[in-house]
Image 1 (cartoon, one colour):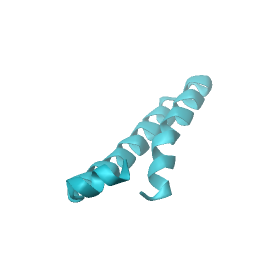
Image 2 (spheres, helix red, strand yellow):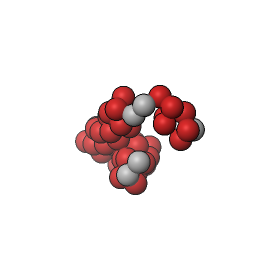
Image 3 (cartoon, helix red, strand yellow):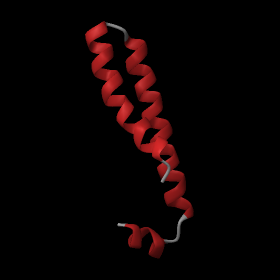
Image 4 (cartoon, one colour):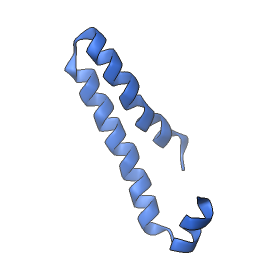
Length: 58
């Protein structure tokens, strides 16, 4: 998996906390959008990968 996928998923947590502190929902929404993008990449790769290979990766 590309590193940006992990960064995008983890960015939600950081942006959510920063958004709560700053008082801006825009940061929370941006973090949620990044999380959705990261999870979409994981889902698309998982659906294209054969089951045996998916199991081998853990």
